[in-house]
Length: 83
Image (cartoon, rainbow, N blue to C red; front, side, top):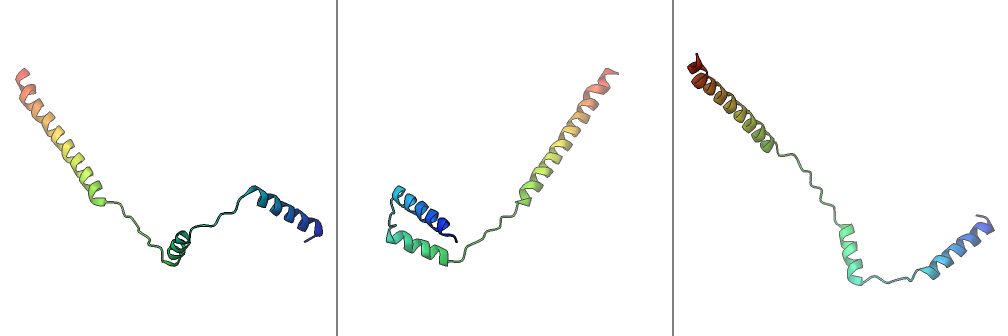
């Protein structure tokens, strides 16, 4: 590093030091953070609920068959009496 770069870096550090007030975190926070960082992360993989999808498709199919049957019955009952 050049001397100018070192001086600029020191100036930036001094300016930032005068702008920000350092704080000391609570000991409980530090301990909890250390504990959480040491523990192995639990990974949960969610899979889609295929049963719900199958039930929705089957209920739609059943409803479509029911409507088709109702239309056929309606045509048989009321369509043949017009002849």
